[in-house]
Length: 450
Image (tube, rainbow, N blue to C red; front, side):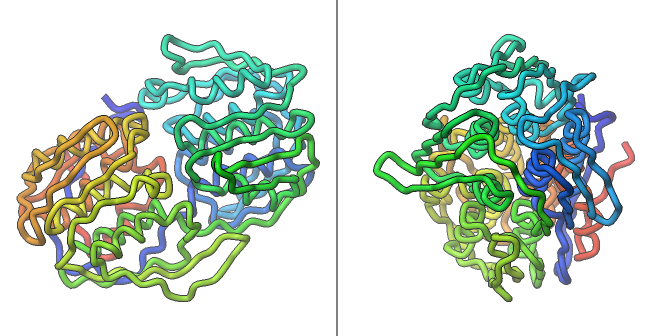
């Protein structure tokens, strides 16, 4: 049963060349953080190109509940009049974060060091996901968490009345955990230090500096040491959100496996902590070029051109690259199905605690479609069949997971028989224009009437 309402079965059929421009939505990570840091600033932050998917809209609603004035001016233009660090008001209602693990974990962090109480919930998928990896470090500041068995939502966070700064080593690479601790550290006196053994996406660090926080990053033998000085006055910003590389992954990968395709994705964020998929695809032999490389708002961006690549080869993806492409492994596994040889993915344990167990979901769907997959707790191997040799013709469970649904819709564009997902509704959480955008390129993705 769908957590967002009535299931929306969808089918994708083999199609001709995909051509044209794919103007994918704004970056989800930067959109969330723009709203949150705008709410923690004093004055008006202006945001252009905000991703207006349900996940981000839920974060906007949450910031209003904590007292910020958040206004939608249309066409991705938003303003946030913030309340300042430590200025959050206690919300009157439960905060519903929908499907968004990023939203709920970051919001928990930024309220955990204020003397207020808030209760969080989400859809069926989010409420099944453990929150302990965030609430454990927040407890070090003095916050308390009361949730369901296994540290699951609904959950009430009682913020620390007298927070203390912490030093915390992130046990498993996670930008969400790191960001929650840094946001909590904003309202703690002194210096909060986060140590990560493997680098994860660094939007929070870049944007904190942009908003005026005192933050340093040092590479040491122990890992990446991030030091934040607490209780700054954050200054409002004008933010242009680059297009989301995680969303770009779908038209890019579709172009690589669909005969005759040539697709341009303009203004894509190429933050090195996010661009691991594109590096991997090029290693596989993908015809993928960066055009018009430039920098906008402290983030590297480029126009990305992807062309049909019939001679892809399987590769071993280095485990240390996992953090820079963790959300892209599902669609990479689809491309791997059309490559020659094995694509080996290791160090990907986090995939098992995303919106769904993504390794299990993709492995079952790929096997049903005629592809050999081997898997372990933190690794999986896809043995490709080469272009034109993937049968397809099955219905796959999306498991309330937008990336699973979109990955199998991409797969259906090049399989011999159509691919179907039982529920494409969750796609709206991150990529609300997926269907019309892919149709404009020439894809045949349709909602079923059944």
